[in-house]
Amino acid sequence: MRKIAITDIHGCHLTFKKLVRDVVQLTLTDELYLLGDYIDRGPGSKEVFDYIFELKNTGHKVRCLKGNHEQVLIECIEGHGKFSAWLSYGGRMTLDSFHVEYPNQIAPKYLNFMDELEYYIEVDDYILVHAGLNFMTTDPLKDKSGMLWSRDWEAHTNKEWLAGRRIIYGHTPIMRHILEHNLSKLDERQLLNIDVGCYGTYVSGYGHLSAFDMTNQQLFFQENIDDMSAWITHAKK
Image 1 (tube, rainbow, N blue to C red):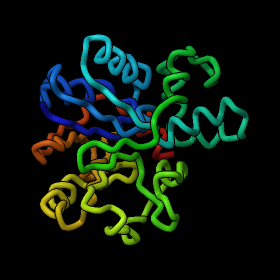
Image 2 (image 1 turned 120 degrees about the vertical axis):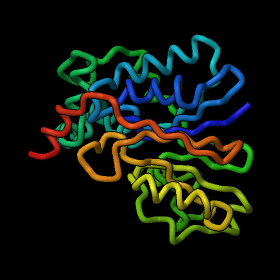
Image 3 (image 1 turned 135 degrees about the vertical axis):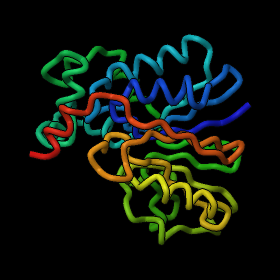
Image 4 (image 1 turned 135 degrees about the horizontal axis):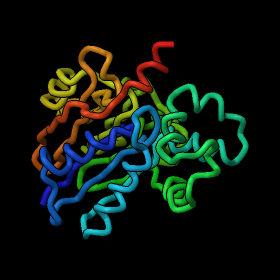
């Protein structure tokens, strides 16, 4: 049995499926942990959710965290005035994948799924979170905003609080070779960012989706095979 973590799929459903099916070769005895940001930028946000539902319906063990992109979509529906901002960083591609004009038109089963996602998971000696932990607070696991939005927090890591645990996270893309190097330092750093910028096919060093086998401390990679033209055109405006 393996415990596998993947983060920041961002609507790249073909890449996600190929990574899980053909590269990782997920089995019914494995556990899959998804660390948020399923939507936006890529062409298949709906299809990402559909594949997650398919995996669960066929007996695969899947647990999912909330990312900041899911949170903003929910806040758009709740009337927090973030609709324009959400569109600017990839929300339009999500709406197109659902064939709707506004977030509140997305089918309830998808909205409920996003709204009810967990903020962190503890498994074995790992803490799984979307973005990071705010170590400037007494209990980093109570700061939901920090878990969704944190950047440049690593220097404040409290290793005494971690007590030997490692944090696996995403949110801020890094290049593949940096991830591979950081894995070799995992015991020392106790941190591993596994987001290698799947959506960023136009940026050298990005454009892959990674999976981390926490059981065997092994990385898997799949180059992006989705049509990212809509996002690339939008991003370069």
